Image 1 (cartoon, rainbow over the protein chains, first blue to last red):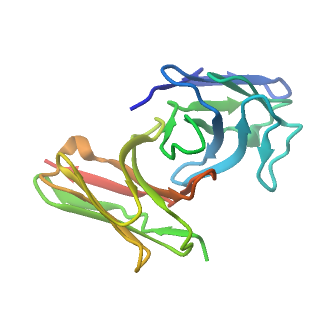
Image 2 (cartoon, helix red, strand yellow):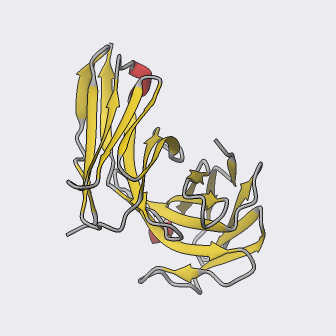
Length: 116
Length: 110
C-alpha cells in the first residue's frame, strides 16, 4: 500500500504554545487528506477534511481557529494546534487519499501530543 | 443510532483459532468497506478493501460484505499472537470521509 509519513510521532509542549504536525504522502499525490483525533480506547474522530489548494472543511464542534490546517501541495498537509491546552492532549492521525475516485485511505503513524 | 456499530470486545482467543470480527451499519449508501489493524500508539494499517458486496481473501484474512443485511465481517485463520491489536472497520461512499467503528480489541494468546 501507499505510504503516509507523519511527523513528529510524539511531542510535549507547554500550555499556550503552538504545535505543528506534518503529514506527507511519500509515493503518491494526495488530493484529499483527513485529520483525526483519537482518545484512548476510542475510535477515530474526524476533525477536518482538506483538499489541496482549498480551505479545509471542519467537522461540527472543531474550532478552525484553534486547529489550523494547510494543504499547500499534493504531498503535504499540516495541522497546527494553536494555544494548546492540556485538554488538547490526544493522538492525532492523518490519512490521505490519492483521488476522489480512489477510495482507499492510508494512515500516518500518528502523533501523540501531550500539553503540560 | 451510530452509522457504524462494532463490538469493542475485548476478544481473547488461543493461538491457531479462527477469529470472526464484524460490524453493522445503517447507511445504505456505503459502497466501499475497509478493515484496519491498529497497534497501540500507532496509526491504522489498511488490511482489506472491498467494494460493494462479496468476499475477498488475502492470505489468512477474509473480508465479507453483505449489503442486504448491512453487515461486514473479517475472518482471521490460524491466528497468531502478532495479530493481537485493535481492528477497525471503516466504510463510506465516494468522495466522502470514512465512517469508523469503535474498534474491536483482539488478544491472541500463545
